[in-house]
Image (cartoon, rainbow over all chains, first blue to last red; front, side, top):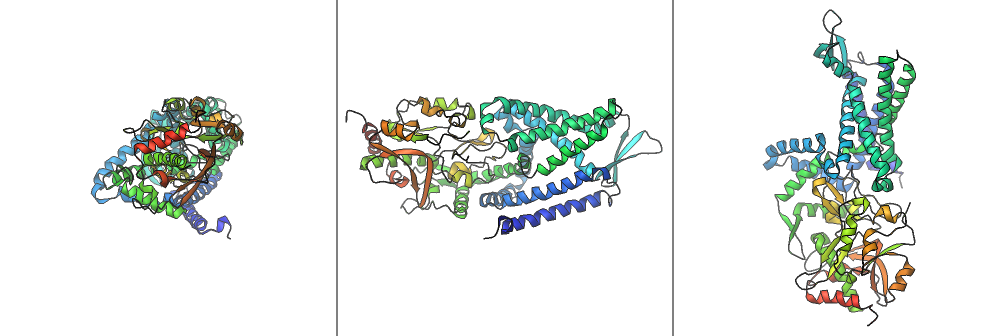
Length: 350
Length: 214
């Protein structure tokens, strides 16, 4: 038998990971104008990012090859682009994206503090990544605009864009973007750690690598980044080199950890939108009728897909009765009742 | 800490009196605060007062986890199938529809599947699950095999179930007659032509079977 890393799905995932990594490398060469705007001091971040790209694509590809994931990946896209609902899906998709991802409404419903912690961490990370990655890749750089030294112009992929005063309010906000991101992340991490230290459910379920380590890493990245600002703003660069190396280590470790731990949910969660459209498509189609109580209980498409997935997974819920050919055609309530009645029958027979 | 290896969850649906204690107690558990994970079903409310409590059976090979596209449902090393991991669950409903026992619940507003996790915050430190703590009739019991043998001399626990061609083994045990030859419960035996008063009576007679007066 072949070892795991030589299985066909692992080889496929590895090839996709390599392609994604090479595409990113190509975009870095392109966006930085053949590294003309690449900052050599950030080379450690660059290689960590390339590795993260490989790892994330590898894991994503492996995940997509699981039978249920493959099925709903395909079905989700079909539902989004189904002919009769394309126009309405556009608006609905936008609304769902804002509600779920921009506002985290569903997490706030789980608990306000949980929602707040997630919202702060998420926006802090998004702002941080939005600034850091383009800078590391050389996709954004700044040059003085005009003759003097009073205006900066941002260049994106080498193309000139917005100009702003060096001492202006906008300039202050832009150059301290990572500071604001750190404030958000630190506040969110504090709330999350409070929950993890106090709530019984969190205490019993959490795992260090999965739940605690990511919070430590986000905190470490944020706090060392802030210390850099403190050093050059108020301490005349005291311990700057040490701090910059420490910050680099925390960021690089976080990047390397991205494909393995909890951070990977960032890439899984968009499936939530596809599922919502799949449910819409199911609700507007034929419904599955329970073979025992004759009541509708799910979309027929969902039940047929589930039967196919179970077959692929090696389950055998097929039944040879007059009423149904498959146990999936029984609604959940009838399943609950039927088992208890089977127990009653066992007593009756005895 | 794992659930003690000598402690088991026993279900005897016949003994359920429909008091709802388990439902209320379940909602007070810290792992699913405010949400009761128990299904308390009437077998056929028009014909019979018989009710039955349904908790997760914690399958050795959980179908709910296998069909989850987000890989959100995990089984701990001590055999407890946990609720969906909150960061991963995408609320697709696959687990709800696939579970052969009909256990998982979908909390649509939170986009989250929740299910009985055997009160893992309690059982992992040797305490009883909330429902088993309050059940007055013994329909739900958490304890050792020896305790159960002493309490129910005419019953024995089994953990093998048949759903069509699929055999499922579970961590949770269900009580059957001690001297019957059955090795498993086949759900088909209770599935069709069963919503009659006679079935309610079958469950009732099973409950009184072990009373000292008979």
